[in-house]
Length: 160
Image 1 (cartoon, rainbow, N blue to C red):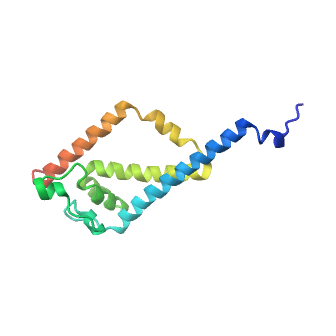
Image 2 (cartoon, one colour):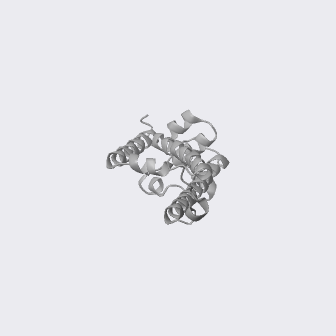
Image 3 (cartoon, helix red, strand yellow):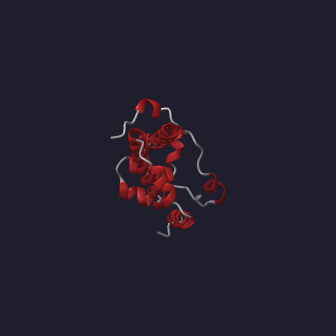
């Protein structure tokens, strides 16, 4: 039977590196939890606009400059309304306001929960995300953003 001295190995470079990695992972998780939690908290505080866009003006922000200058919504028009609808449990209304914004809102909630898991347990969830995120996924996300924007423009024009 081999004797393992935990006191002398606790200061070993490998143990120190693992401790540092776990601490760094939890710091990143804290940033994710605070960021996502703030966004979701603000979304819950806001009242979703019935028109499907313009909710952001409740925070003192100006109306969308795209709409005021070229009479077309910008690629993210409706995101704040979608987030606010999600925070109020109105999932259908969130997708009607901006489908891609609703997906980003769900992703924000998932990241918030994942961040809490990492913060509490130190689980390596970030590594799984890094392995999942590829150039193909990036293109899919960009295409979804474009489709959400087209949908918003069609809705803005009263076509759908």
